[in-house]
Amino acid sequence: MKVVSLDPRVARLEFREEHWHHQRPLRKGEQWPTYEVFQMKKRGTQAVHVGIVHAPSPEIALAFAKEQYTRRGTTVRLWVVPSDQIYSTAPEDEVIFATTPEKIHREPFAYKVKEKIERYKKIRKA
Amino acid sequence: MYGTIHITEEEYGHFAEMLRQEDPEKLAEFEARIERGEKIEPDDWMPRLYRKQVLRMIEQHAHSEIIGALPEGTWITRAPGFRRKMALMAKVQDEIGHAQLLYSAAETLGKTREEMINDLLSGQSKYSNVFNYPAKTWADVTVIGFLVDAGAIINQVTNSKGSYGPYVRALERICYEEAFHLKQGHDAFVALATGTPAQRAMLQDALNRWWRPLMHFFGPPDELSKHTKVLTKWKVKMATNDEMRQWFLDQYVPKIWELDLTLPDPNLRKDPETGKWEYSDPDWNEFFRVINGDGPLNKERLAVRRWAEEHGRWIREALAKPDKTYVTPFA
Image 1 (cartoon, each protein chain N blue to C red):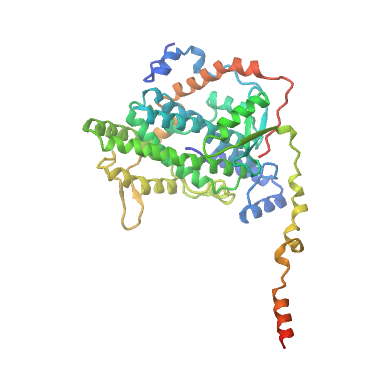
Image 2: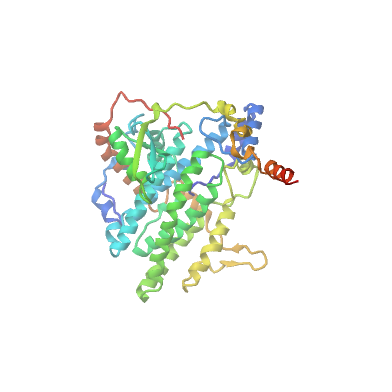
């Protein structure tokens, strides 16, 4: 069956009957496994996770990552890592980080000496 | 419909049942997290209804990007001049990239990309109705680039305030890129509007044909009812379809009228009292007819996608390593 289309490209495709129905479903895995993509935008900065790509090999993952994540702005380097090689803490373990913000003894703002110095100076003068 | 939700009475009954079966303690924890403004991440516990609706929304959005590239992609060879060709190529590549980002976000909810593509190709999943209409002239491409993308931005900016982390991250990148789509569309639209009488006539004709699909873009009216209440509470649905339609009219009708172009609706006006736009009934029967497969181009759009899928199969198979197993991506 020939399709009458406004579109010259579609008209050239010469669809067959089968294209009116989805006859051959994709098999699981046919779209390849995923790679996690990390991008370094500027020299001197960290590579940061930006998303994933589906690819059959690391080399092609890098090529796809370039197309997907570097269309604008600057990039100096891309990394890809197979998704199954990422080890992650479990979501329920989020609690192990919960008290960190309370540990202000690790922060510079927990140490205030100005008042003591001022007081000392006053006493010394007197 | 990009990522909007329309729920029928029948589905709602099913939803209520799904909700009743959830662990009340976990549900309360989940809702408290959203209430605090925190995002939900892929491995978190979530109600099945949340997973199902967020997945459906992201998946439809991804399909819309893929199919949405077709009406414009076919105009690249005929775009007037190199600057317009470069812009259109960049835009079409972005749209395909957006589909990839959205499929990735949807995958984190446990549906593989193959399953999603199968559901698109079999007609089981929906995509935005607006892409079932033909782009007959270059003026149509400028109307799509300006006004369809304007609608898409309103929808996407709204959804980007939602609760599902991977969708929010994808939308942030998408919205940033869409800003260029809108600007290049407006630029091409204004070039015709301020051009020769023949160019203006071509643009007016395109506007007349696209106005109804544009009015359909945000989906049928869905006042905050029992149907959408829980999805609003969960920050899946961030605005009603009518609210988004009003924002669109408010921002873009003046930009059309200032060029002395007309819109094919004699009742279109902003009520100075209420500040709301009034318009004629845009024929929601046509909307439902088209979304159920009977639009001008539904068959052709899906056939093109199937053709591409069939013709790309050999290379996917040639490159595949059968021993590699698939795991759900992280974020």
